[in-house]
Length: 121
Image 1: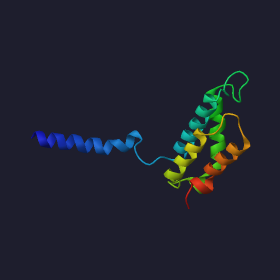
Image 2 (image 1 turned 180 degrees about the horizontal axis):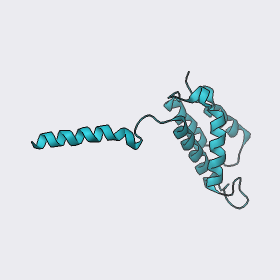
Image 3 (image 1 turned 60 degrees about the vertical axis):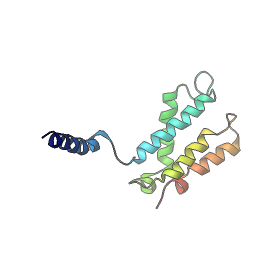
Image 4 (image 1 turned 120 degrees about the vertical axis):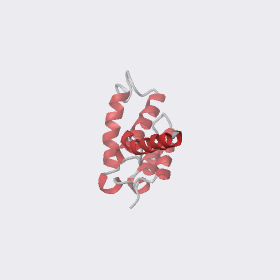
């Protein structure tokens, strides 16, 4: 009797999990993570707040979500077409970008994070 109750509970939990957001990340999930990673780095570099690139972290995130929407268009990157390994490389590149805003670091991050690298056909 107890085993039946445990099995029923397990089955109910297994059926309910998809309702709680478990599953493959969407393009928007990746976009949000990339935007937050970028803005965390900008903040670490002291470029958010008075005299910084952005007034606040939330301003940065809004701007970067728009940018990643353009960089990873739905036509190329939707429906599970973001390669997780390449996405992680993009985040790694963002995280090691120099705080001085050198053009070489900027170019390298843009190249690593472009749709041709991150999205699959």
